[in-house]
Amino acid sequence: MSEAQAVAGEVSVVRDLTAFQQNILVILSEEPMYGLAIKRRLEEYYGTEVNHGRLYPNLDDLVEMGLVEKSELDKRTNQYELTEAGHDALIDQFDWMLARFVSDDERADEVVDLVESYR
Image 1 (cartoon, rainbow, N blue to C red):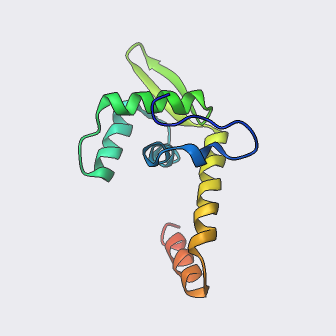
Image 2 (image 1 turned 180 degrees about the vertical axis):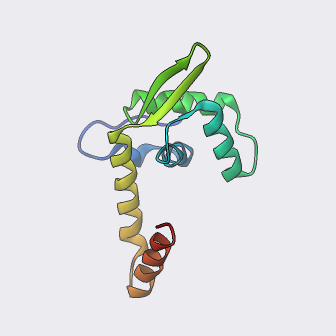
């Protein structure tokens, strides 16, 4: 595997993912996309070019872990879609982060305001 390996057992696999892989999952939570669209979104976020040699092995790892599903759009283009396990992995990560970040009412209000701004 290129950047992460799945852990067997009850612990969520997202805890072993790199930030790059987690960012791919977040991007795919919006809608299914083909590889170059994912690459463009990552480049917008990072502000720099994302190498094909980094992107596609990580997508393959996420597929192998069952977090992303890969399908063929045509002979040259694959589409990637977040699976239910991928969705659950993101929710687990958000839960873990929020449990540490929300340490008082002020921080809880900040998170509520942030979430409401996307409704």
